[in-house]
Length: 264
Image 1 (cartoon, helix red, strand yellow):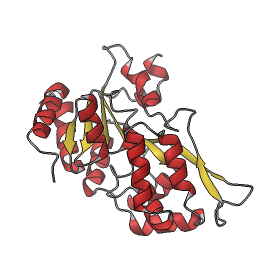
Image 2: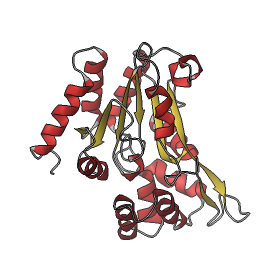
Image 3: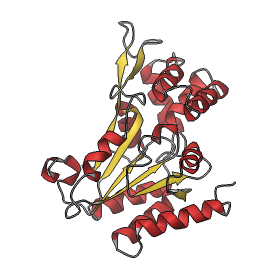
Image 4: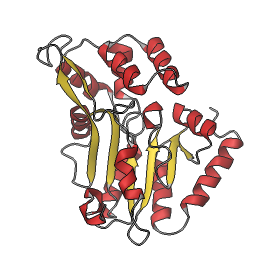
């Protein structure tokens, strides 16, 4: 595919930052918060996540089961999240820096577009700039009900993959570009919804103490740990400025994990 036909290449960036949303950009996962507090609770949700990690259940089926346990009307769910969710404070700085330095941010989420948009507009204080893109699932009505009825909404998946949203599909066309035009590709994530994207970029930021780290260690996928977007911003600045290579960052990240950096 020609670079000119790819949407994130329209400004000819030197770097594109792909990222998960829930628990990565936000301090808490909004879907987990709804499942734990409005659905069937933490214990059963963790069982589902562990089933995905050990390969006995697809993310698609596990996540649908979790969300289907939420009977609260959609508009009430949104209000709950607006009151309870917070962005990583350093993401706001990263968001403004990336706009000024021609770094597109592509949010690849297993959550739902209208939920993410509502949270961004609330937490960033207005509509997002056009350097931020959202690729995710949708919300639809269930059983002929209005989505704002009790038990009236459900997730509509982005694609037919066992992830429901195979995040790798959005990254691969950019990874396949010729070296002469291909930007550096980075990704940040934290959990089981990021498994499909973990191998696809030049550098993976995996959140300390979360399931994505467990997966990457098991599969021997290079990554570097992060605890907040403060370190992501600093590292991305250095990569864009040519001060460090993605290979050296990944090697340093793996060594840090081996020395116990992932332990709380």
